[in-house]
Image (spheres, chains in turn orange, purple):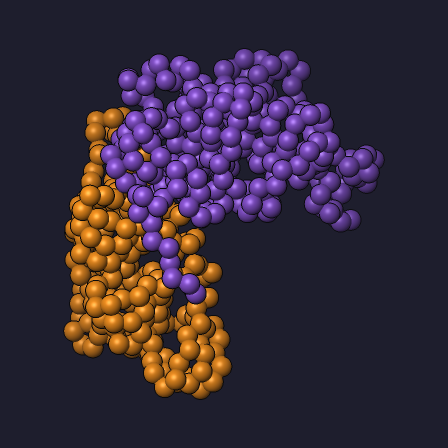
Length: 202
Length: 263
């Protein structure tokens, strides 16, 4: 559960994720992920839908969603890439948007687009079990199972790695046929659980 | 909430837990067996190969003895650090020293090839023999108990050093017409705890702290022979021939748990 102390400022949170609050709060639904008309159109087009509410007021507001773990990410002008379904709450000052992720989405079943969060402030992301934060440096690239990936930040290039060989077709695959390889400089958030992915059983 | 710990290849532990739910294995040109799909991330250069890979013939002969179970396992080899996790369950590593341990098949995640994996005679369980480390998941932390002990079937994870596992039924529940009726219909009240597994002898029994079972992995078929439990061949005079092994078991299916627990 996430507790947010507010004094007249606002946060953007996943619609319906408020579980309790004390003080004075107003909740306002924001269509299109709070990105205005352009956001509404791109989110509809990309299928990266996100219903967001703006919470404004004085006091403490508590957010939670399906008992999943909540991880706080501090952003200092850099960009966080996260699946819309894993984003719980952001500071109102952070800009959110959508971006093309490339091939990875196809294997994770999460669509070809992902949500970006940008600016200065904090964002809360959700994971099934506490997330492990892994640093990627140019010397140490990282490979991640698409089902366990939840978010990344920093300047990272991601490559989609497919180790599908004729053995996979014969049912003798390595079980880890699809991986996302991160190179560059940044952080990757991984959850200790795997979503069911199209590529998961290969 | 405190700031998250950021791990890199230097700070990740070697063959130890990162947190309760994630385990880090360090490979230095060595090999590990792991169940398919339990790797969540890795640094370095690691190859994952299905067990049918020809190069592993010798390795398999010494460390893997479940012929038809092979498609669920892969061999990781290379150098680097690899993170293992399973559906956000608790993960722990155990060291065996010239010992043996039998574990529910769905709970085992990975093991060193210095251990030999064999099917247990008890259906749905696997036995590890030898010296080495293995990683197992459980729903909630694992509790170690000394026999003699009676445990709830759903809480049992495994046992080490061969105590004798057997069924135990509460006497009053089993006897008489009324007892039989109760067990069939549930009328008259059952506590749900009339059936236990009993362990006696020297050894250790591993329990998880919930009664939620983890999905069972198929352990592979056993030879169709009379006298082999779960072998599918009707024993002479067996009451219900053809019921055992009647339907092919799908991976991830609970299998014949129900029948095993006498429900």
